[in-house]
Length: 452
Image (cartoon, rainbow, N blue to C red):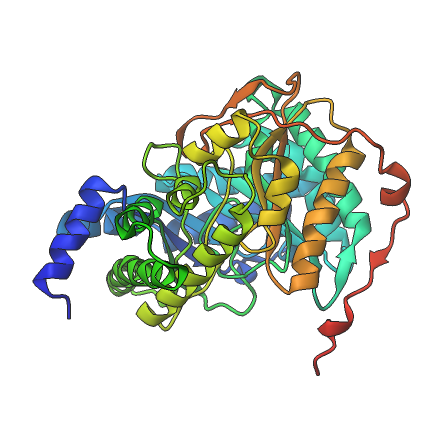
């Protein structure tokens, strides 16, 4: 039951502290669409997605009106497309990307995720064809998001895939250069990818999921920042308790929306992802939470410790509020999507190396980072390899979403608009890792992966 104090407190969070449901994402299985004709497969996928999710937006709007809770995005994720294109010609996989984009447009959703491949141990012909098509797919569509999982703790790191993804990111930047290389903002490279993540660009509908499922992603950096500010100069144990209690309240709201959406759509409820997902709006920043803890500027010494405390407390508070917490759940640190991160990067306090250290304790990884347009594919691959190795060694999800904006140089500001925000172009080390990257093969799984 929700008492009157909780209701008033939630209203205040929504009105004054940017609290919202960041996304309701419907996951849809496409395994029953498999056929040998590319045109027919594309049409079957379009029909399945539009029929299954036809009421997603209207139900989301109804819930907004009834409860007064903003639901920023309604989205769809689908079975990794490389898992359903094995019987068609490799050159026809692009037709599926167009079908997904048409379906998203018909539904009125902002993104559809799942133009994806899982190649942590090796790539099928279908996975190779999909990866090769990513630059064209992201250039010719506006709502399709793509992801590739190149490593797991159990399998190790597929360095052939890491090398190829460096090339693909460069090709995608070139293919979308007339729009700030925005295609790269819809492409993420993972280690230990979760199969129930509602957040883009990494969302897809995993093999162990039901025919369709509702996953909800909550947000609330502004609420946590305000709670930390109000806590004052308390000790760390008290600070952690404050964040836990705030995360509990935020997750309760997500649980309410997820349950209501599931009932109205007659589709099973999957998980609540309680990640603190920032936006470029003032007062909605993870960086400002860390600064409210006592740091002069995000990126300075102490930032990793502050983020570790924040991430742990958010998870602990969330799991008390819902028995079905999943996805990524914690704190995101995307540079372009966080007003405080943008400011810290622009003044030089936040560097690529510091961000890499922070990813060891946060929810994802090097996210929405603009680098110079002339950064080589090998350097991009090496940045991916460094980040992915953190995930593999620590048995956690890590990811990379880099934007080598064509024609950009260090200090330029790349603007994407909307929730994607803007990012200062950050410097990378120019020393060549080419010999290392071109060795090929797999980096073996760590010894602690042997748990059977």
